[in-house]
Length: 180
Ligand code: XMP
Ligand code: MG
Image (cartoon, rainbow, N blue to C red):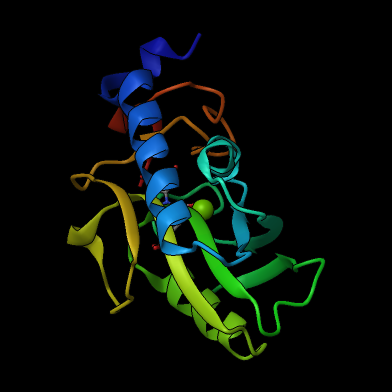
């Protein structure tokens, strides 16, 4: 359906599944005896968080935040706005932020600071994808699935103008699809 818009499959379904399983195992080990709250950043992290929690063998809870980022452009404005806040308090909780991708890092550094002010016991960041070449701010990332080159990717929850989220793999979007 979208195949003609994708120039290359960067990470296939099997590779995604293996990595998500591995991250689940690592988080299970690191948080043994704890009850972490996983905070999914909407909407890009939907597939990642829903697959990841199947492989976390701990009494976790989940919550979601929606923040504005790109609109229909492919670059971060640096202006971050909370569109949907958490349903529950994170005071004294061990929080893991679940993100689809870190690009400039502006979204996550804002989010970490904002959540820090709510008195959690700890905050860690888990991202499926990392584009370190584009980093504009120093943000510590604790768990990374894949480090990827500076290409605009879609699928497995990631979108361009709200499309392509339902692709089961991570693909590179043909540059002619977006006018940057
Ligand atoms: P920053 O720059 O604040 O951006 O780290 C993080 C958010 O930007 C979006 N983003 C992408 N979305 N393909 C996408 O579909 C990409 O290649 C891409 N790079 C950044 C994404 O929403 C992420 O949460
Ligand atoms: Mg996102």
